[in-house]
Length: 325
Image (cartoon, rainbow, N blue to C red):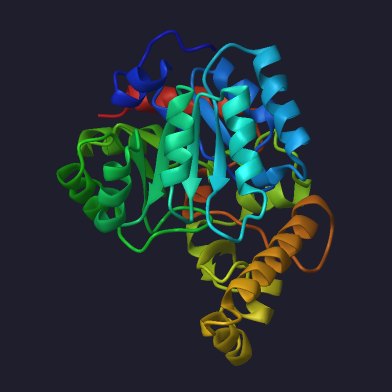
């Protein structure tokens, strides 16, 4: 049943949406269909630019969303040196005038300057107060508080500490990211002072997600206790489901990888190689049957009980929100 009410929250005012939820950008998972259905359901969402092999594919995807639905959506940019397509991707976002850009893993200064020239908002992933202050000083429109329960590249601080600290430290909206998979959780984050929420793992097991049935079913079958952090995918700690393969290979880089990762002369290229190799492993597992099952997800898969359309996932969240105290 379609929800008719709205939730009052700063993120809704900032983007003109009914419910203060960003469907988080997820590598390999987020796609046009998910964004379209999310917008129809009253939320917004973002897609990682790296989900597209070429900038033309990225441009086509943005245009496809705009042709199907009216509503705000964004693109996630990796803004450090490991993303060799960054400048081209930024140009596409500005040319196509997406509503917002989410920056990750680097300085957002260039992105903020370019985006603001064409009226695009910039939200920056942050994991601590120091970085939040830096991006706020650079002109970010909001920070996304990535806590230790986030999927993918998680932070190190609990939401209970991170959100209040950031609210005290910066004068821009603070969006909570990590660990929430229910309407009750949404209400708790808003009461804590969050402007809205970025929620990802809950939507992996959606009908519209392009990943394999095995990946989606894993989000149903596994829970919060099955999530572990690994540095083997990108060199940066990343949360994955503890499948038998992950248990077999371990979650820490070996001695040689650690040495190369710290070498002043070689670390740039080794980080890029590690990132590429890790993303290939994720891609193979996400789209096909393989014994090398490395599936990225966060603890909020605890709330996933079945594979459903995006619209129904959102509807349940709002119903739970309305019924929560």
